[in-house]
Amino acid sequence: MVVKIKKIIKFLFIPILFIFASINYGCSPASVLATGGGSAMVVAEGERSLGAVVDDATIKVNIAAKFLNAGNNLFVNINTSVLEGRILLTGLVDNQEIRIDAVRLVWEVEGVKEIINEIEIGNRTTLKDYASDLWINTQARAVAAKTVGIKAITFNFETIQGKVYIAGITARPDLLDEMIIGLKSIKGVNEIVNYVIVREKL
Image (cartoon, rainbow, N blue to C red; front, side, top):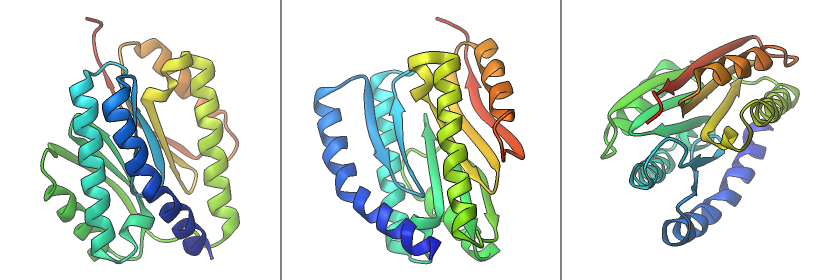
């Protein structure tokens, strides 16, 4: 039931991806809409150059294509976050072989420099579990917006069975720490996994 709902959502997003990605490449230096894997994310310019943003969006689209062609529900079950060629994979798959195959496919994509594999083996047993993770994601974005304001769009959140993964780039480690404290207060959060890159201000 959960997989069917996710498939419907994902395949509605596929045509939107290419339309918005094309519009943003040509018209907007501020952000690029990129999707593929288990959810859509906005890859914002933030602390990166426009060239890096475009490169990351291209990598993400290419990974999505690999997962679509591979079968095994990789496109549906695995989320990808891309930051300067650094790939964070999260999600739930049925067995270790699928987990390994996903990493192999990502390494085939040009521009990939590093893969952080946080794919877990298992499944969300009920629609309630899936809804809970979506709710936590929504709350996490609200906490980020309250803490760092407009730059909240430079962070990506993925929640798998109450475990929240954060990816992004920031020059304000103090605000990052404050945001993590806020995330820990969200009902249903079991663990925070932080993959945010901290940079010195230019």
